[in-house]
Figure: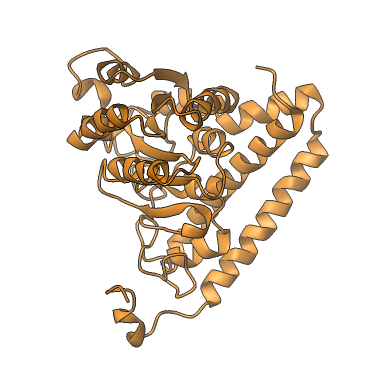
Length: 324
């Protein structure tokens, strides 16, 4: 697709931040100072970057246990996110949420649910509220293919279509629900995107590793929503490189076939856009290396900050339990 060079570069920068952030978590996790489970999104960066590039700070997202990429793409500060992983008071959720429950209303992350499908109706509710208040805002629900089998998925699509709610449903179909392949859970060969037809809304199946396609399709969905034309379901086909949870390779334990992972690693979304930018002369190898160094420097500083930050006290335990 034809896309502004600056936008393409910004998409690359965001995907690279997500990739290097996750790799930094892998590097430091064995120290056992992060006391939270981590669900890594390496291999899926294009979806978060391509969708969130269209969002304003007042637009909202609702994510899953695999949320780091979505939060970073939406603008969550890396220091606040890493401090949360270390359970510190300065974390985005005050050390209470860990990796699976970050929140930062200042950048439109109202809350994250690790319950499968739990964030989908929350996105519908947030979008409906903004619509009732006359605001030109959208909400995005990110979820995996396993969540499309939950009742909340179908109920949310039905209600969003019924009320013409400005919400975008983004299914990151990485073919596995933990270690259960899609074909062992679904009797039909129809795509998840096809389920939109039953609710009278557009459903689009895309290559989730092509950030330019994600950006284009998400932009069209956002335009429809902001113009009062209702919700859209996007199914983005992708693949996570790491295990369901933890910084390990689950092909060694037999949970997924190693050749399948190898094939998807050859479709790396970051390398794909990087090569395009190099071929078009938008960046050169020196600029790309400098960008990596700058991001790595920021991440190392954020790790240091998170480690040195104060832990919550016993007195903090009852804070935020009840509304004032």
